[in-house]
Length: 121
Image (tube, rainbow, N blue to C red; front, top):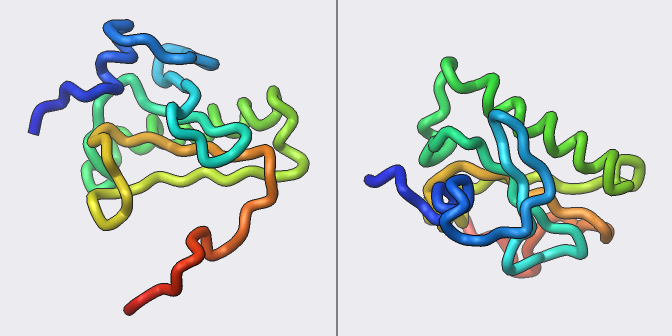
């Protein structure tokens, strides 16, 4: 599997994105198909395909994504009311871009379970 994804192109500024945060390790930008009033993707600049590919060597990087989420929540006024952070894994988990990323959703009350259809086991 190639490590080149649409996110790599955003990191390299080959395609545009509404970037709201950047540091040496991570980038955050608005989702093109928002599911909440505030919906951003927080990605590591180093490509990691899925959660299954996270190792002890890159665990701190993954933790940093959550630090960025908390920082964005405070900066945008969502920390007190709350927000949701989700990372999908592979097809059944809803992952469509194989470069790990946090979905940060805020600006409205979130329900649980997140989907209206009943869980079929």
